[in-house]
Amino acid sequence: MKQHQQALSGDRVVVPESRELDRFSAMLERHGATVLRSPLILVSPLQDTSTLDAWLDRLIAGRHDTLVFYTGEGVTHIVARAEELGRRDQALAAFAATRKIARGPKPGAALRKLGLSADIVAEAPTTEGLLATLEKLAPHGQCVAVQLYPGAPADRLGDALKALGAGFDPVLPYRYISDEVDDEVASVIRAMASGDIDLIAFTSKLQVQRLCDVAKRQGLEAELEQAFAATTIAAVGPVAAAAVEEAGGTVRIQPTSSFHLKPLVTEIVRTRGER
Image 1 (tube, rainbow, N blue to C red):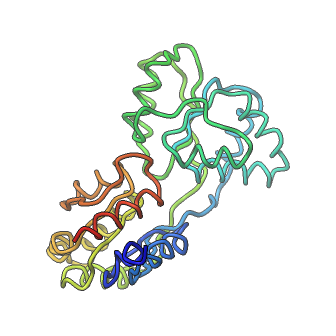
Image 2: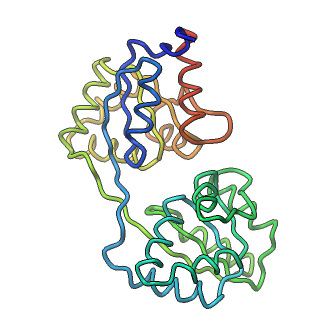
């Protein structure tokens, strides 16, 4: 047991997670890792809630036949706004009365915290998985509400639903803001490029994009390429992994299923422990 607990002894691990930064860091530290906390993206409520409020009106009025949830944060922020409006019970009743599709485990977990559950989980935790699931449901003539995240392919979803003969009612219930300032992100890139970091563990594609954006603004494209080559890269699931590959990196560690923190840590410990 002691050997297993210290599988990451001597490893310097960058954690760009924000929402569960302390939890993720502690999980790695229990196995001996030295964690460099570098939260890149924070989730924040909307500044202008008018569009979300109007969507809540339609939800509570029973206008939707199917609800699609991309993220757990989306579920949480929709309910939080409903509570601010004094309409939480109405929103939850509407959730309960409507068919719910979750892209992956996180929206399902957020629904369970509310005493609800997803009726359907997408075939794969990606937009392609959602579209394949919706196509099988044949939603012709129905209204499909889709909880988006910043950067979600809204046009693609809308076009696909239109082709299926369905209505499309999207809602974006939160926004992203950058946490670490550019100079601090640049320092992480340089440390990775110089070989001072053993592993970086991405939990969203936005984290990868933030690294790339800072590298471009600060003229560190070559350093980022070297950083990806010199550092073992872990990804929580296929969406984050695809962003890494698109950015020119190679994911060495990824859970084969159940794409959230615990399986990611288990896979990191298993892989690094085999050295």
